[in-house]
Length: 210
Image 1 (cartoon, rainbow, N blue to C red):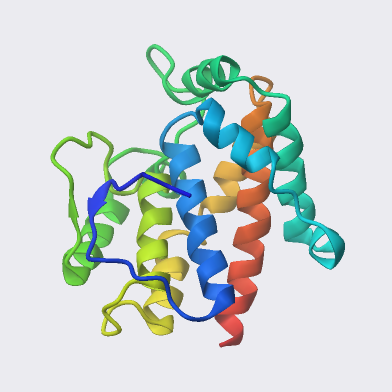
Image 2 (cartoon, rainbow, N blue to C red):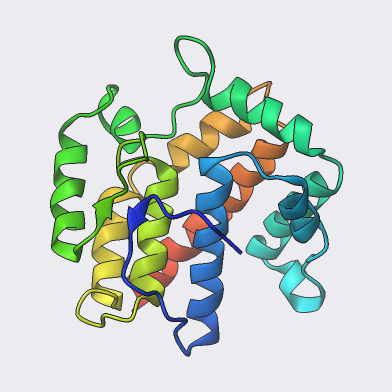
């Protein structure tokens, strides 16, 4: 579901647990959507995969179906223009996608240093052709995908998922989602933010329960 790889990952073999496979896939999709605007093929894929039955009645299912609705009425050009308006504006960006901004009010601050220490411990290295710093939300989603579905159990395990999520994502993801949900230029990405928030709420509860 995703072709986005901002960092050099070891092979991420799908894990056996169906719930973890779904979590890894959703992290991968969110990484892709936050890293670049979706093309027509991805918009169609999302729109064609609505949740049904009991799944549609959950908080996550409702948020997913809202994204499906948005994808079904958004063209590739509209998505590209919205992404550019929100995240790539001339001068100051309308909405920042970097954790350090929400944690400190500035980019490239101390949270990024701590994050890089963890990535080095995981053996993850940023690709040379990626200009975004490692605290970009897309990169963090991709790291979580790696921690859920990677094949190195010494790194890709529940304990690391809990620690990484609590330190590097949970403190600020809600602020990003709020910024997007309330932005007048956000249409498709308002639904992406809704899905991210619903998923973040579920992750916070599930990871604390284990």
